[in-house]
Length: 95
Image (cartoon, rainbow, N blue to C red; front, top):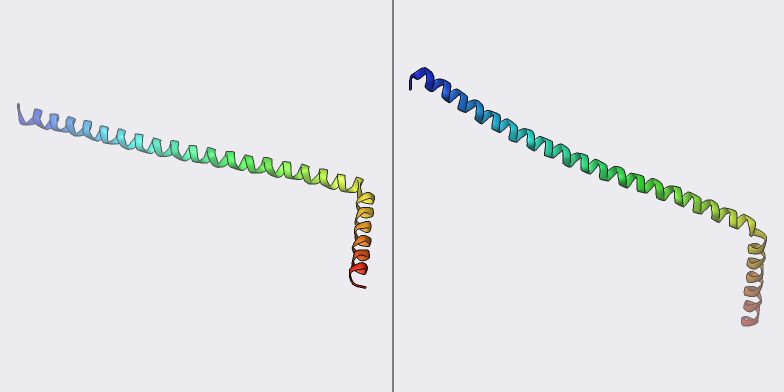
């Protein structure tokens, strides 16, 4: 083999090695990007879940407020009776 042919062969081998290294690096970068995208998808799903829970909590709060408003008179009456009962019991126990 001549010196020129040997140089070309070494250069070709070096190019193949560099190409293989570049491909391995590209695969590693792509895997990192895939992992990052997976984490972002997971975070987005959790944010969606939190928003859904907040929406549900708002609906429950509205229902509770509505139920209280509809039954306020009854609730106030029950609390008034409970207060009267506690006062009467206190009077009986502490003459």
